[in-house]
Image (cartoon, rainbow, N blue to C red; front, side, top):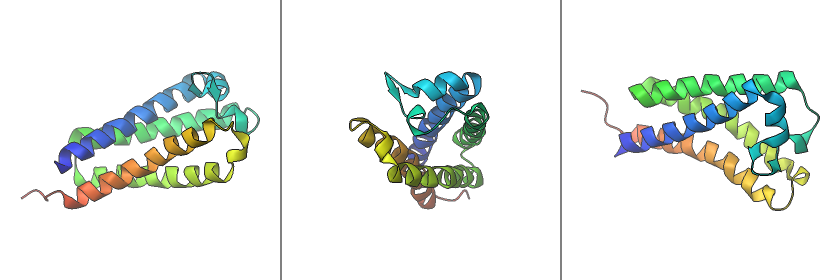
Length: 138
């Protein structure tokens, strides 16, 4: 059961990283103006456009996706832990920043921003807990 939980959480995280990473890297202006989509603009609400910053964010997410995909495929203990910890290193400060700056968002977007960012913190914690319960290979 732990292996299934770990793999599903890693696949969800990899999808998130690929989606944001590809979009921000390939089309940084569209990402800035339209992320997360469906008529919302969470990035544009928080400061002026900076192509370099958006492309760096995209590349960071693609690197995170690569490590996360390797972890999901191999389920090697060290890479699973490394991927989960990397997500926490990126996403805890990201969540804290946005939680402290919710005033830039519409009322309807505030809980959505927090929920989306919390997911990227909760899933790595779930992975670490499940990994700690997984039996070590003989």
